Length: 607
Ligand code: ADP
Image (cartoon, rainbow, N blue to C red):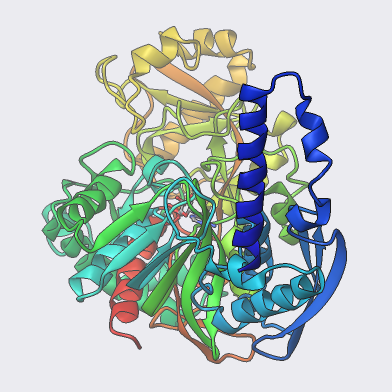
């Protein structure tokens, strides 16, 4: 073989040099080197060469640039490979050839023909550069840790996103017999779910009845549908409201605990919200992660691994390509792919692209975690998915003025607090839909409100909000204000005292009469008359993106002609069409768990 001959001759030259250096130190070594034919020892004739190979859909043409000893560049000049399939090979194979100076790598799963086409084209180009192609093919590159060679795995179901919907799908797929890999781009699981208020809406025959609360599946349906301006898909809403309680029982069966207390969450319109025992959304994520740990022989969550493409073969989703901490990752899915990557509230570009209802959102903060950037929406579009309702973006009126987070929120119950503006005047029904409250807030000075409530919400200073912050801590930190009189409170927060006192007096009249007030408020419980009084500042914050990938009632992803994309499922905030223009508070957790569970089951059973 030509290359081994070269290596041998180089070895001999070196031997001679060493022996000369050792024995005849008077002779300069460089003189000996001039006797070696330089071309004999170079691997390539330097230059750029083009070559062609047969891909999946036709010829692939590449240009390969070499120096005497190195392949420095491989460019694909022309191809006809399928987006989302072939383009994987068109980037990875060239990168690996240059990195490893080899043609001895396996084809990429799901892009076999395109991979072989690129390798063939590069080999044909290198032949012209006098390369020993057989030797390059014999240099076998294996996928292993620490290299940037593509890591390949194969399971039944692959899930994109380890938030609530993705983990629910993973657990449900496993319960239905599937091996599962979850890809998560962040260093930890949880997504927005783990930092959410975590309230879960469902009509509950046990807890609501025990508290004397009347409710029905029909009312939950009607409020969800009408609360979204009748824009949501009634079939999906029906699945949501009918399955929310069985899914809550499923969660309990997995070990998750909810309190017995049912309440009205902000913008929830009715007391049907369930509160997990663990703070925020940690209960959901802990429950799912425990299950996954207990079944680690055929379940895995790959962190720091960002999905970049859905792999399609003959129109079917067969896997996911991702970027992991050690290089490219391909997970082949024998049964199904579930997209559960959440919304795009942290992607200002996408928000501005789709926003129609709100003022410019470039400077509006968000409650979301940094991973809520909507990348997988683009991935789904690349393989033909249809998007619905992208312009429906939910803002909350209760963001922290500095961070946008819901932390520091002093409200305890919708019924027992009012909002006032910088003048100390009320301006909206505080039990209204989230969009209605936030629209009204944008019309106030500096888009700014104060929550006002009394100590019936905080019988002691140790009582905590659902961010585990006690009211005493918030006051001590200057994030909330406390006073024995409304006048003093007004003074501390710089609003007109007469206005604030009048607002509370009028509110109390309506608590007693139970009649709707001038803003249409109907939710009341106690008079606000028990000092100390508290105030907390809030601003609008981007919270939830209602639009996204279109699915059917089986969570199958639909294309732009309304056809099912085989093998592809989606669940959670990444989907659209459920909540219409406005999502009710407390419906998100019900949505992501209900549809995540359905998606996992269906992906596992290969619908
Ligand atoms: P949902 O409530 O719908 O479950 P979450 O925000 O809780 O949404 O979870 C979505 C998860 O998906 C987040 O943890 C987020 O980091 C992850 N994610 C988003 N894009 C990608 C991606 N391209 N690859 C892998 N994970 C992703």
